[in-house]
Image (cartoon, rainbow, N blue to C red; front, side, top):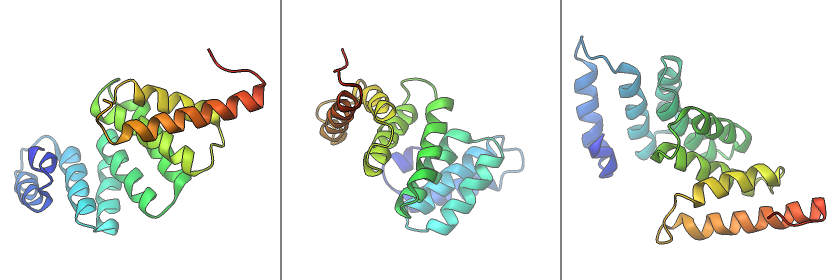
Length: 162
């Protein structure tokens, strides 16, 4: 929703609630996921999680999983957050904004976990970096994650990646 892209969650929530009241509105799962995103941005974590879980159960896998990943990150439930972001990587259209975001977040979660699987962290960082402009705040973070994962892999395997 455009109002969410403009970071206007209160107004977005009002419009979404109106759409939700329409008896023939066909995108109820997506509305629930967008309402969850609004609540998340407004700091209503419990409400955001509840709505996102409903949206996920109704089939809005990508947007609901992104919200659930964000909530899990805020509570520092890193394994749970990673599960949500990896689900988005699998379900989102390749190279879409959601797919890139999920790769960014998965790489970041793995870095926060101390790179338990450097190859997976490297793969997520590499995918995200390929679609992140140098002017983006994520670029340097992703590059650092990529280099750290590469260093750890070379220590484990005794050789550098090509």
